[in-house]
Length: 159
Image 1 (cartoon, rainbow, N blue to C red):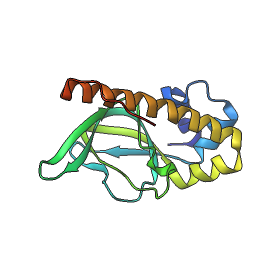
Image 2: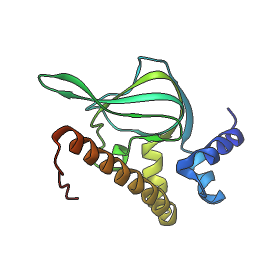
Image 3: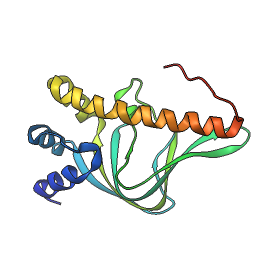
Image 4: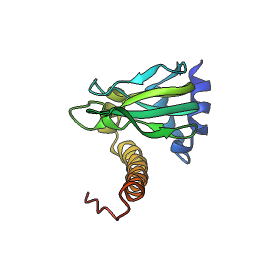
């Protein structure tokens, strides 16, 4: 895919809505198309976290190992959502495994490239981190509601 096409695809993803043209072009330099077949792992718990994935099609199950229960699905992400923010938090390790439950097409944004671009252009960095923290807050709220559903009481999360 040509970089012009990649810019169009990036512009269409909800995570990047209303991002300036200048910042969009910064992202193009960090972006690549990826395809993951159903049943394949996109990321593996404990490995180096090296990308932010903007999901275009398909569904991805987020799983974690819970001894002695084995692999436990904690969430599923799909089109218009993103996967992974561990690329921005040292020591840059995945905290879960992500497995395609349907063929996935996504844009992979290289984590090292993103960290460098955020460091070089603080306005760009602020835009990315502001968007990521909104996603994090939403996911934490979803987790809180899951805990409420499982345990039947309000669980207070401090952060």
